[in-house]
Length: 338
Image 1 (cartoon, rainbow, N blue to C red):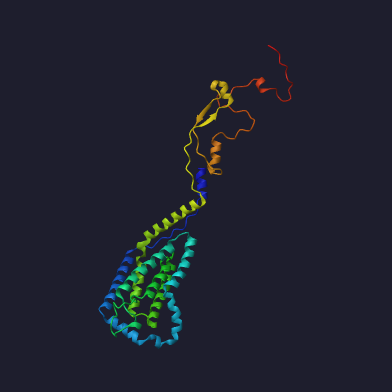
Image 2: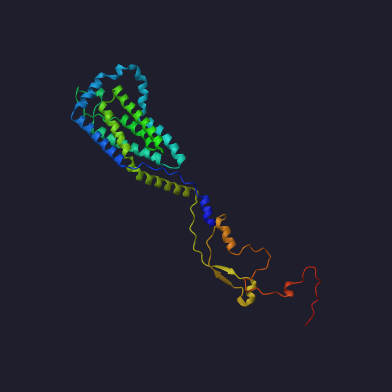
């Protein structure tokens, strides 16, 4: 019982458990609808449909020439969609949360989402090879498979994922609603800003929104992998600490029986003072909570130096006055021969 109490006191407080979003039916339906929208945009551009004609109309309208006073502000605003600056800002915030909550899940979720973003969006960019508005060669053409890399819009998809992670990791429904509105506003503004500057077609931005939303909706499927990765990292950290501090308990050697000398009073009963053997007990480190319990269980207080050995119960016999000696203060009696 005493050992259990000390074990509970020495145990470190566990980090608060954060319930991860589950892949509900509503989320699955939303994922399916977004995927259908994604494929429809790709198909509409591949067949050079009305969407490509709309791209050219917006491009020839040249919004940056219509409202030039907005250009200085939008040049800075579009940075909210660049992967490097936004990833650093969000990683700092999530790193602080991980430190406060004693968990690596926020950082691992961010890393997983950025990895999915680079793989999926990058593969489609290189596979379709669409040219941007500034490099278009033929009016009305979709400019596909020409060595470009702007379809879908990386700025837009990155804005959706990076700022959407904050809403995904929110711990309360109210915070999730507010952060979802903020991330949607930022990603919408970043996408339209790229169209205003002329670096992307309108269809690029539409596909970028869909690509980023698909990554956010698919994150719950990766939660088991994230949890296993976090557990593995913590296990490796504990092993490294044990090697560094040398706190790993050494195995107790199987010592043989140790010699124990019997008291002199037992020798008077015909048991002789020869050495007998008793099983050895495991060594308990100094300061261990069970050391005091074990000491009390083995005979109470330790023997004082110079005191007579105490014989076990049933072996002790009364001593005569000669063995006990004269009492303090009483005159000594002369010994007479018998």
